Image (tube, rainbow, N blue to C red):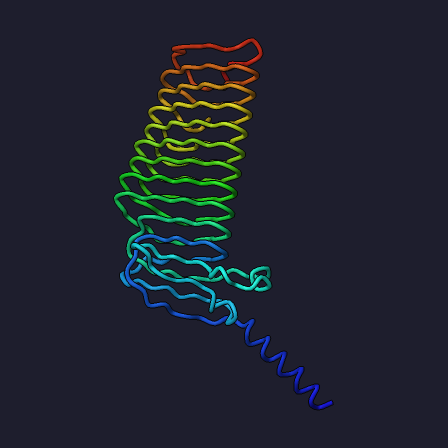
Length: 291
């Protein structure tokens, strides 16, 4: 009986030890990009010293990949991880310290949180799977950002020339200032624009929803098809061109001139007293001024 109790106690102690989290500091070379896949929770800290601290169970730690490849920090898991461990995996916590961020690639179930601001000349990000980026601020001449799957991003700062591609059920909360912002979105993406953007070019298909609540815009070019929706009634736009098809809906506040085209069962609502430069509305679509 005593031997049985001792065996049970030993087994419990061993299991408990393997399920307890441990921390490991990785000494690596400098990097200016992040490529993360798997199941990670990343806390990004701007620092003059580069380093990574990983927190995971003792059993999981042996399968964690932390390395630098061509200037990018690679976070991932070894392919031979046991199925039982993979199926019951909890997020691996990684604290990343770096001075410059030029690129960000995330796939799988990865989340990144930061309160830091980075100033690359050019910034690139690609998010897929169920990934998320929160709190990031970028000051850059240009940026290219691609989202797919159920990924999401919140981004502040100042990006002179920003280009976005969204597909799937993505979410984007964009509060940065820009001279030019171009965006293509499809699927069931949800977008909130709130920065001061001079020129905005939007092309939506599917069931995209977009709100634009900035502090003024010189020019908007909007094309939507499917069952997409766009609303910008509190953001004065000097010159707007709106082209809708399908059963799309657009509501805009225009102060200068408005060009409108709607087909299918689409609806355009506008407020302000713009010059109507061109109007082409099909029989079952609507074009309406609102207060």
